[in-house]
Length: 244
Image: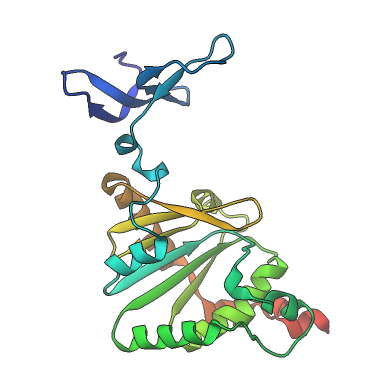
């Protein structure tokens, strides 16, 4: 292996070889060494290597039936969800987003009360549910809805929510990590969304990589602003002010 490469991760093949492996090139980019496969129809100059799931657990499917099941399995005292998107298509919103934009008085999504009851129950027994939203201003219409009709109610029900505004900030790249959830300061699952903000699945982060996610999430939490404080300081995003 050339000395100019920096070893990222390797898996023993059982015969003394260091294969497959991931190495970082000094000029940028990742070099992948794997098992050669030869699919038909490849253009000239291209090749395919097979890298086993165990080498890249971050980008393979969770082995639990759902993200909800995974989180419930590990959540005992602390769960921190990091959100970075400015738009989500969530079935549980029902018609609330459209109703919010239309000036309706209150949320009516059928499952909302059950969620608020769960937040209160978890808070009462010490099962902390924290939520950190990384934003760039101005807020999108969807985030205005999420903040005013979702976060205000969730906070009243006992959830701890903070906002990290990275507009014109050196830490703006935090949003490039995408959404992920840290459970018990140890287990990390990344959520995936399509271009329209629809949830398409989650992947479990390997134990060695999880430490960095945990540290970053906690740092971001410490420098973020409590939601109620942030929302009160930004009345221009309140629907009443938008309509005035």
